[in-house]
Image (cartoon, rainbow, N blue to C red; front, side):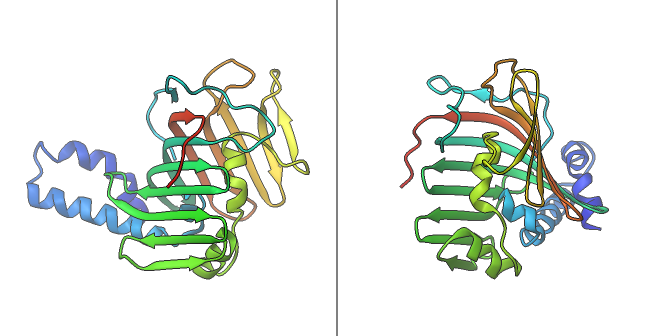
Length: 230
């Protein structure tokens, strides 16, 4: 039921404004948002926390650029995500600001309603759900353990998004030396790039775990460089 509703989202948007009565259109949108809110407790909605659609290449704003390899690099991105588990599929939008030792993530429905907000600072991690319920912990892994019952590799997400594997990872690279596939523990990350430069930022990521769900992340806009967080 939830999966079918999520897949119909784009079609419903077209029909609203044509033959669909405004009240029915609003009900459909409310159902879509409710389905995604329910999915927030699903591991990958917290994990990219955590994207896909659109044909446009990622846009790097003036003043930004490719990231240097080998260090944590500040960035801001806007993306779309899709989470699939067996026959169920959820989708939405992600806004993520990352700085050294700090992250702010906003997860939204396909229509832009905020579903959850996550904030990570040294010694503190918090998740605020759409129902205003707040979860707090000393770090991101403890937070996900409290909410989900087991920890997730939140601390590795920024490195994965920037295509920076851990020293212990198994890495397959393309002819330009860019990572095409990273395997770390039970996690696998696959990449597509829009540009031909050796230091181009990823356009699309596929994150999966053996026997678990799959996350598709489509980055629509990159901003690199210093992004101070309050």
